[in-house]
Image 1 (cartoon, rainbow, N blue to C red):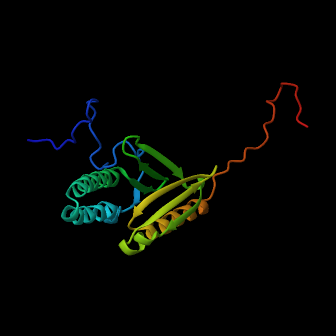
Image 2 (image 1 turned 60 degrees about the vertical axis):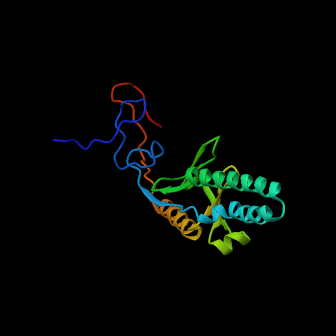
Image 3 (image 1 turned 135 degrees about the horizontal axis):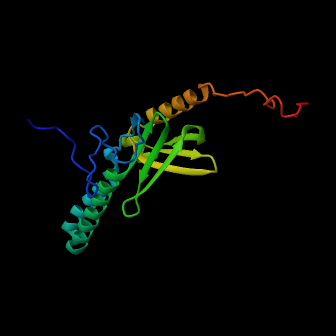
Amino acid sequence: MTDKLPKARRGTGKPRPANNQYGDILQAGEEVRMRAVISPGIYWRGFAVLGLAILMLIKAFNLGLFLLLVSMIILMFAQATKYYLLLLLTDKRVIIRFGILNLETIQFHYNKIETVEVAWPPMGRLLGYGSVFITGTGSRVISVPYVGNAREIRTAIDNLITRQEEKPMKVEITPPSTPPPGTGQTSS
């Protein structure tokens, strides 16, 4: 009989949760509502330089080789950015992960988000991606570029914020405490 246990985390010996593809980002009981799709348009700069490099190989061979090297670096950087860039909506918060060498993870609880904006740069309109800007309380603005489903992300965040605001607050009202009988204290 073979047990289908998830592989252990590297170095801890503890099993990894089977359904948690986001590692240690999610809290226990937290559900993913939506994930941003990073557009293939992230590669456009690398392919533009690659096309220029091919043209330069005909006219100026050394410059063409240099541009070929530059285009490969740009494409590798775009691939790494696509791999690490994450915009995740859960039932409790928005999680944003970005960076390559300095990997940062930022989270906004829905009640701490002031605005969600989408910008469509010219190449983004052609290739179908936008940049999502999330402004939190305290004027912190985070930009997530190359989001292929930017409109849907903005709508989903707006809906989740509205849902959070509509939840009734649990307020417990306790009556004023009265002194125990026989203590000689009177309440006024």
